[in-house]
Length: 239
Image (cartoon, rainbow, N blue to C red; front, side):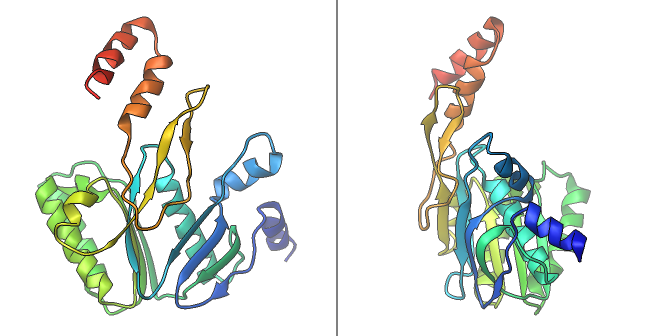
């Protein structure tokens, strides 16, 4: 009990409320909780929600803007809540589910690996269990057109179920041609004086955000030696 209490106190965890939705307020990744306590740097907490009417969403936006961190935060909250433990959010409504899946970023797969992925993924999608599925930039599983068709089929199946899903992707425009889905966005508006991204890490609901790779390239340009500056400069000229 002492260890669990210390864990909850040090990481500022709070008891979630069980409901038929995910509604997170001022949530924070566990790795950032201790950094927030030091007060040395400003850490932004985030809000996010899914409900029975909008049980699946595409998450779009800035490179290095926090999409993957948000997905991991939701995964942490869901798992801790399922275990009956407090969660890293000021308040949270979560649904008790049968299964939780988190697919991290994948690089391009060869034919055998792609088939192995489908053998794992499709039984998850088609099962009757209530689940939370978190997908992080799976467009690399195969060539773009095929990936869009696979993921759009998954979207349709989840929409008709009692499950929830969030898909981090840079191909929202392509997916919206095949399915009607909520799109949320994390938007970067520029760079500060230290060339850090200026970004609101709480996603805007029903908003398609750009990935803004030019901001990352500009930061690399300013932090690079002269020989690399020339390369990054030529790339920036094309934006």
